[in-house]
Image (cartoon, rainbow, N blue to C red; front, side):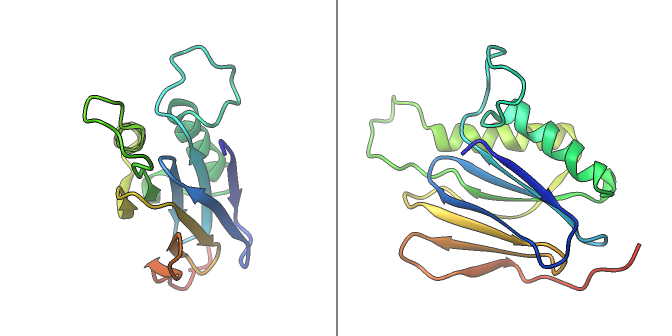
Length: 160
């Protein structure tokens, strides 16, 4: 939880297991085969967390963008995939919906960076796992107790 990973190595697989209310944010430059994945736990640090606390959306999203750009991704070509944001517990309407707030925070930060969300599987009440297949650009999701299915089927990488 609260981790970031990036790769430009074809064949690498980036994984976030057991996303409940957390958001798995994948960033892709599909033309160059560069990908990154963040496991966002909470929407905001409130300005009180030390740098490197990647579990907060306000720290994780800009850091993930910077890291994939450092690997050669082109900022205008970045696309996002979101998985998670579930409501894991039966609660009253007055309680905080962390999953929804996490998704809203990540979307707002992506909007500020001009990055489009091209696929998502969020909400509901079950945990999920996201896998990003670097190089083939395939992104899959597996719901708890379910089977792995593609969110993005993948495509060939064009050499830079």
